[in-house]
Length: 193
Image 1: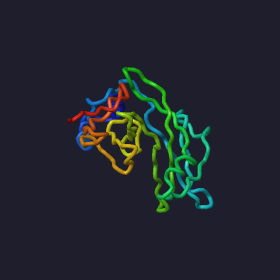
Image 2: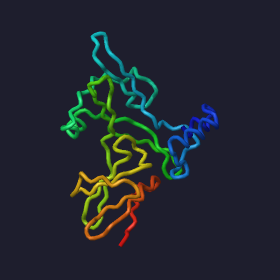
Image 3: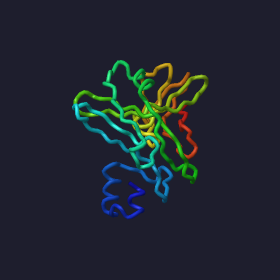
Image 4: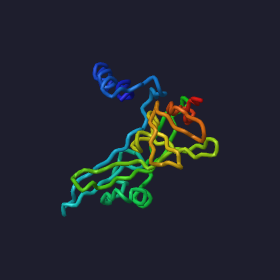
């Protein structure tokens, strides 16, 4: 949205309304004045037999001719890890880090939700270790790669999701999740005791 605004593709009024509606904090992260390939383009629809299929511009060259047609797997909520391992594919994109545009890739999983809709997930997380405890970091519930809003998980208690400004206990210490420094790709925790 920021790049569209800078290029004159959206009005200042629309851009400001977007910031208010989305509670976007454009001061929190570095933004590129130049356009970057930060979106993933997907085509989907039914084939001549009525079967839902999709194509993803995985190399982000704005051309679907070199991409394969994919039949997404049916979602099985009890086997999401297995689906991610078997059906994810790498998608290239760009990000702005430390004042430079960098090329990256991330796994993307698209599943058929069996109701005429698709589910999209980016089964990627960051990891760090604190006092011998492995901490997993997800970006907006595994839906983006921007790490603007992160949740953390203690690997020993993976079902406990700790969102930003919430508290996590690691060993005998409590910490507040302050999010991620996107330039340094560093999790920021405030030790409370």
